[in-house]
Length: 409
Image 1 (cartoon, rainbow, N blue to C red):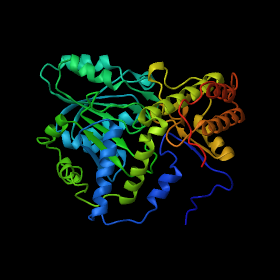
Image 2 (cartoon, one colour):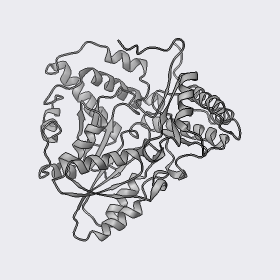
Image 3 (cartoon, helix red, strand yellow):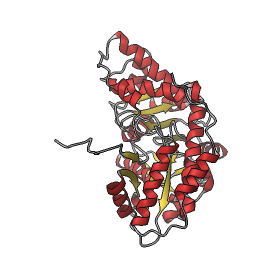
Image 4 (cartoon, rainbow, N blue to C red):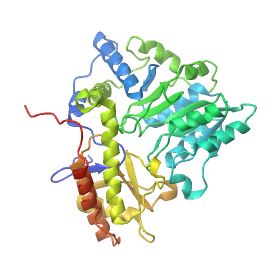
């Protein structure tokens, strides 16, 4: 049997941008006995998590919960709103935007991939004016949807979704707005209703602090109406049966009961007014991102995301100098310091690594991660301008958390 808990002492530092560490109280909730998913207790649980997820997405409309990864929710969003041969515009911000575009093509959708050329398009967020220009040129309204990624996990760029909605509106175009917020939800500010999103896709293993295995489609009335005439094949992913059964807290198939226990606990943690609720969550992540970026700047290294306004509160991509293999640096850091960092993907493979600062995290967690990075880069021969650890310490010490910590019993 494979040995999974193989760390000899201390704890493993999982600083990839998802799956993120799972808090003990969520693990304990998930360990409770499984109940009958057709019994009365489950209906109470179902209604609780459905209402809670509406609060997390900031929507009053249905949120569909699937026993699947985020990739499944990608497919569900497309299958429920589109028909074979439909044309969509997708915006390339990184590796995950590219994977969603690849999926859409395989499903028989005609995709047009907008974006800046080469690696530059992977170093900033969505340029909404390009979407507006393209939609204005589509006078026949053949484009049925615009698909963008809110927080691009492969690059550390967070896009302005409200700007995309305004671009669609400025073009006076009826296209649906589909958004992937798999790594953004419950970490970076997100307002499904206020920003005019039609379908938001997300998953459990990032800001929600759960293991992989739950995914979501948050819907708008316009998206639900579109689903009534959409002709792409769907059965498991179909919204109609799920929405109907969810009214009483149940699903048309077996849901992942114990993960829903964990989801209920995660919702309680995220909405806890003691720590500022969702606004406290967003402020906490923004502060962590600023602290980590202060460290990277002190090292004298480039940030993968060069557009300051788009730099993510969820993760930071660190570019390695010419001639340095980022994956070799990551390997050394893992082997010497028991610290996992995200690899570069697609166009930036081998050129950068990613530091996750999301979910079950705190200042000292990040100080340990930055220490491991600094030691590992020095051992790998990376020339550093200064101490990123000292810079991050100064940032965190000089920018205290504004919310109270719970008092000891």
